[in-house]
Length: 421
Image (cartoon, rainbow, N blue to C red; front, top):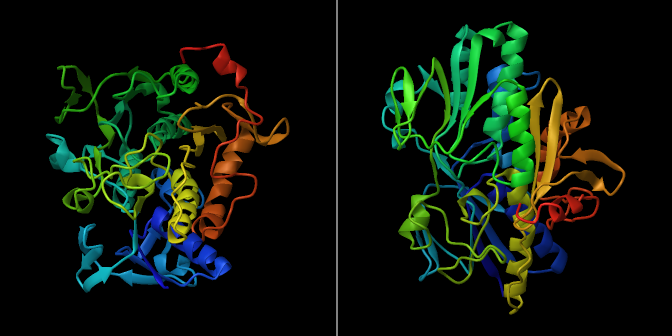
């Protein structure tokens, strides 16, 4: 029997799960017709978008963070650059501009997108007084805006949650603090972070640390503030609160894919209704999801998609063998948070265990330190780019870092001391 598997989306999740599935099928001697369908000729290393506005070494142009997608499609994967038009989970077909593809199993890795048009007044000012860094074009435009900035109110705003890489706005605040300091204009800049969250982060222990770090840098934090409208001088919240700006850096609202909603698989915002433990669709059989297009309660980040790919492939193989999918996904997320001046924080957490201090990946040895600003963590952030190209996208295991989070080396007593955290 030949098992037909379609993977929709050629971003991080789609490439990783396709390559891993093809490798496991070869290892097990399974006959699998595996097709990856997407429309992105160039692959962007998205963590690099954070550095692009500052023209950091190795991140000066798009050529530094982009490569042809086809370079990362491994043996056993048929890569079809087609535009997806519709998904029919009842008929088990996907329609594209080139025809109709049938499937036995479907994997959705369609990512999510930013919606500048969702905020009143933002489209008219986008690329002029208001900028972003979540897309290549916006990150390049922001580089020019920062060069022209000579002081005043610099407002970094998160319009609403969820967003890709929830810590990226905090990293930007830290890097722009360093940038302004090196230019000698930090003292005449009021740097503000406006967020719909109650603080810098969602998890209490980490939130306390990150919020305290930003305050120590002289950053004003405006919490519980979703974005409703942008004018030439300020932004406003639904409750009427207004915050002034001279340069606005905003992360617009995010949505998933209309294809998912149109197929009856989504939550109305394009995010697939997903069993958070098995990563199966809650609305259709033989459909799995991973990456940014799920609605599971964990970060929308590349590391999460990589860990989820292990679970999706494991459960696909089980179902092909007539067995039930197993609840192995734990929401594992692992992230280096740039804090400026050549230092970074490392966090490692999942659905149930928030970031805590400790050593990673080896207990007591590290060499990385969790929830602490270190130079080594910053070097780890920089080292992740070659790891991404050569290990993560090809679906190779990263040594000592498994798809399920380990508590070894973590200071779990910190949580015991804060039972309500």
